[in-house]
Structure formats: structure tokens, C-alpha cells
Amino acid sequence: MNKCGVLILLLPGILFAGLSERVDKLADAVEDKVIEWRHDLHQHPELSNQEFRTAAKVANHLKSLGYEVQTEVAVTGVVGVLKGGKPGPVVALRADMDGLPVTEKTGLPYASTVKAEYGGKEVGVMHACGHDAHVAITMGAAEVLANMRNELPGTVKIIFQPAEEGAWPATVWGAQQMIQQGVLQNPQVDAIFGLHVRPGKSGAILVKPGPFMASSDFLRITVTGKQTHAAIPWGGIDPITISAQIILGLQTVASRQVDILGSPSIVSIGTVQAGERNNIIPDQVIMTGTIRTFDHEIRSAYHERVTRTAEKIAESAGATAEVYIGADTGYSPTINHVELTKAMTPTLQRVAGKENLFESTMTTLAEDFSFFQKEIPGMFFFLGVTPPGRDLLNVAANHSPLFLVDDAAMITGVRAMSHLVVDYMIQNQ
Ligand SMILES: [Zn+2]
Ligand SMILES: [Zn+2]
Image 1 (cartoon, rainbow, N blue to C red):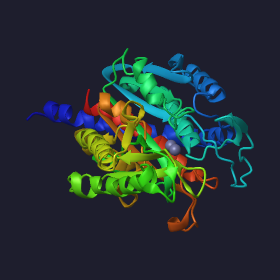
Image 2: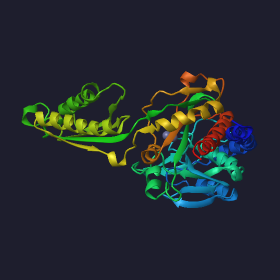
Image 3: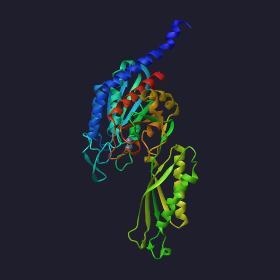
Image 4: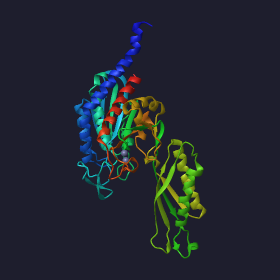
């Protein structure tokens, strides 16, 4: 091989090292702003599909950086497109923007005192899931990428998404709505990345290829019998005893009716409502619950088995069970694209450091990033954000009024999101 050939072989590596260093320098330069943005967002949380102030803030930021910006996508969603100086793939970053009906108790100087109406009641509003961090990190990454626009071999699409937690009555997910409105088209997105902050060592990154987070489907079972005196149960059909049998019977779906190897599942009943008096057997029992799975096929098989188990137990006692499973409005399982995740894991390792990158276990929580992953290759990962000096085993979880995010972890998020975009572009030029 001549010298020229060697140079051609080395060139992508040299360019890559150059771009990588640029990302880190530009990320350092936005760190203080990212922390300031998060504090501001934290102090002004907004409920799902009401993220008006947040949407205006991110739209103005993207416009000031030269992004082509679309607003009011799926109510309050904002999409920014930035065409790099060189041809290449289209890479999307997604950040969810909504807060929760939680009254903050952190005592932070920038704690939220916001109140809003939720489900007909006045509630406190808090960024108790850390979506303020996701927005600030992604604003930072958007700035890093805009500041190296001419060198970018591809197009960046930034997606600020409303209603990840679901707008009241929690049947409309922002990701699903944005996809329906064409967010993955024009230009068509080749890959998408997203993150979630959670309790854990500050700055640590957790990821895993394949099934990562669970599906989440609403379940309601209405058992109808026949009302009678509680002292004369044979005079009617007792839906309470039948419901007790159904609650236990449902546990045999996970333990006896689906293959538990490799794909766990859960069905939990959270509410049981029936009756007016101690000595009257009522006509009806209404139960609600949730179903969690990690696989598209097991998810639909599970729904059939839950329905069959409830209906047949009721039938065996002469009652009826009407089963409603909100599959159309539930979350899919979050499944990380295996090849994409394997290809991008070295990037995350470089960003977090070898000692701070962990293979995650599966989590039975759910996430509407899964809707993007049903359409295109996507990778979702966790960022540990517990401030140092806390007991990691007893720290407040996401959705707690005491949930905390360490400012020092923000820079890792900005670097991770920015490097993922640049590395994906270089690998897929
Ligand atoms: Zn949440
Ligand atoms: Zn969340």
C-alpha cells in the first residue's frame, strides 16, 4: 500500500477524533446554561399537553440556533431540523417536556410552587420525573450540534415531546400523537436516541440491547352477579367471591400460562370497588389494574389469557366478567434496537468512562419512547442523577415529591446525546 492509501485509511479516524474533541469543548461551553435552563424549567413545570411556556422556550432556542422549527405538533410539541454541511443520515433526539401532579417537597431554592387543575381537582405540579433535565440536556445538545453544523455529515432532528405521562384521563401519549402527525417523516428519521434520568450514581449511564422497559396496559374487569341478602347467598350470585377467585386466577397467567424464561410479565389489580352494606351481596364488582410485558407477541397473548381466565372463572359461578384492556392506548414495551445499541455502546462508554457504564436490568416501568422504536431503530438509556453523599438504596424515586437531580450530571447527558448523533452520522455516512 502506498502512502496515499494509508492516509485515506487514516483520514476518517483523524476526522472522527477532531469532531469528538469539538463535541466535548462545545458541551463544556454550554454546561452552565444547561444547569440554568433546568432550574428555570424545574420552577415552572407544566402538566401534559399544557407545556406552553416550555414549548415557547425550546422553540425560541432552536430558532436562535438556526434550526427550521415547527411548533404545535401534537398540541405543544416542537420539532427542529438542522441540515449539516455534509450529506449523511437523519438522526433524531427526543426529550419529553411534561411535569406531574405532585406537590414538591424538596425545599430547593428553585422548587416549584405551581398549582394547576388535574382531574377536576387543584394539585401541585412538579418535574418529579426529571423531564426538566431531559429538556435542558437536549437544548444543550441542540446548541452543541448547531455550533458544529458545517462539519456534520447528516441532518439533526430535535423532538421536544409533550404528554409522556399522558394527558388526563391518561389515554393520550405525546409520542404516539407526534408520530401520527408525521414527526418521523420529512425528512425521514434513520435512528432516534432518548434518555431518562433516574436515581443512581451521578453521571453513570445504564443501557441494554433488546427488551429494556415494560409495556403498560390498563385493565378493567366488571364482574356481574345477582344481588341478594348476605345471609342468603344462594338466593343470588356473589360477585365478590368470584372477584377474589379472579384476582388469584390472574396470577396463574404469569406463572402458568406464558413462558417465563427470558420475558417476565406482571398483572396487578390496584382497585376493587363494590358494595354498600355489610349484609348485602352486591350486583357488581369493578376492578382495575395494569399489565406489564416485554415482548410484542407475549403482550397480545397475555391479553387473551387474562380475558379468558376472568371470563371463564365468572362463568363457572354463573356470573359474567366483562374485560377491557386498553391496548390501543397503552405503552408498547421499550425495546432497544440490538444492532444500533451494540454499535453505540462504545460511544456511551467513552462519554461516561468504563467504570460508569453499566448494562441495565429490565425495568417494569414503562415509557412512550417505545412508540418511536416501533417505527424506526431507537436506543433509550438511563442517566444516574443522584447528588453525591446520598444513600443510593434509599433515595427518592422518580414521581416522588422528593426526587432530586444532580446538576453535575447534566454535562454527561449533553455529551452523550451530542456524541451519539455525531458518531451515528460518521458510522452511517
Ligand atoms: Zn414518569
Ligand atoms: Zn419520565
